[in-house]
Length: 257
Length: 257
DNA sequence: GGATTGTAGATTGTCAACAATTGACTTGAC
DNA sequence: GTCAAGTCAATTGTTGACAATCTACAATCC
Image (cartoon, rainbow over all chains, first blue to last red; front, top):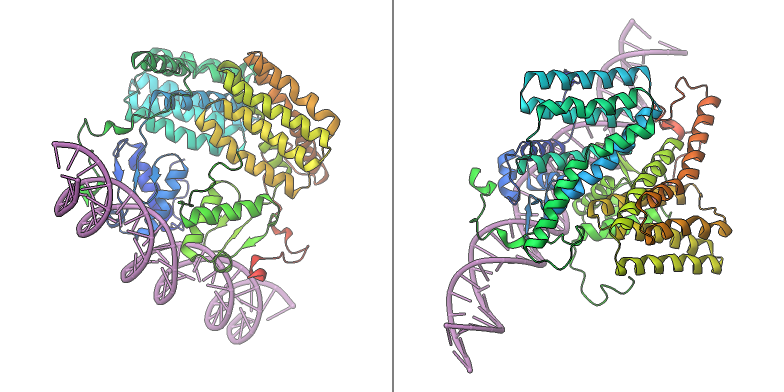
């Protein structure tokens, strides 16, 4: 997967490549939630015209990685507990569907790919490197979705996973218990390989349950503490809008141009 | 829902409005699958610059309503049976999730909205107008998703629903048994109102099963008839690419400019 | 005759200038 | 002192011109 399109020239448009660079910067944590993006500065920095950069920003906003306020600004989204709840509930559902499909339509080839991904996770855990485990973890989930063969599911999952990665890195939530990781994933893989769609779906969905519950609990706590009128998680999507003032103005990309 | 933003001036950007117009044309069937879209012609037609129109086309391509071939053309997607299978399996999953959430977090207000949507479906069936029934049907499903309160689910469902509508109108698949419609939806609504998440999810998902099976069967038939090597639905996503030659060149928007 | 190379027209990709909008700041009346 | 209207700089929205690329067709070579 590393040297696949090795020698070919890069035929993709500039705006696509600009989007890729920005995507990389966002997902690596170089750009933080709430941060503002200014078109002219970014365009100069990437050495493309403003129009081209604009197309890239638009693409990223469709992917949920940045937000636009018309005539005013582009900025990275800030994640509330409600967002975390949405992210993980949706992920549970999509992964459940993928696991079910994978168990229904399994082939020798796809099972080999799945096994390999699982073995890489085991190896990563043995290495005791948290970053590597996190990567292998995400990769295994992505593999399950991939072997479902459902193109639209794959694409939706890709977009969702990006947001999850952005959330994880921006909330320093990559803490994990290395001793549990393998035990948590093995049943899912086994159910798929064994061709048990119902079980695979249930396990894949439940795999996200701890995060869902954590977010739901934090959400409930937020509301109790703030004496909010609605206890339902979905109603309290009001973002902490004017939080910027207290922490001082956030760094802008303008500075680095 | 009709006269909501009545008197206010339209503050949205030109490209947004251009996208809306094109979206409308696609979903109403004015533009057919496989049809080519030429930037200059469309720009003249809508009286916006090419750059602005381009932004609109990009937005629609992110929504899955049109496809782009870099440096070559924009065109409406053509739907295969594999696409139909994807559309309805995904819809079943998302609607199932929505129904479950709706049953879990129900409130008086949302139940009233749900009831009203169901009643509109009943009234539409009584009127015996197929178009009106189809609209009320889609609206009821959308309502269930809406009262889930899950913003990301709502947005994903919106995009998926657009593709489903495009598929339905372009494949003349809006045939339906008016005598069955109410009986098919009532149990789902009841389960939600009764606060039975598991049942609501299962029923909502099963509601899409007939379409899924029809598509899967058609897919299997396609493969058998064409003696395709792979029997799996997901493998046969090869679109009938060079189908254009046999049926003659398709009409382009160029003509109407 | 078949395959390869060159050319022309059409179409999309990119850019830099100009217009419109916003939000913060200033000014002045009360 | 407070509030409202006016001003201005910063930023995004829009446009038309120019560049790069693709497809189809014609010319050429073997």
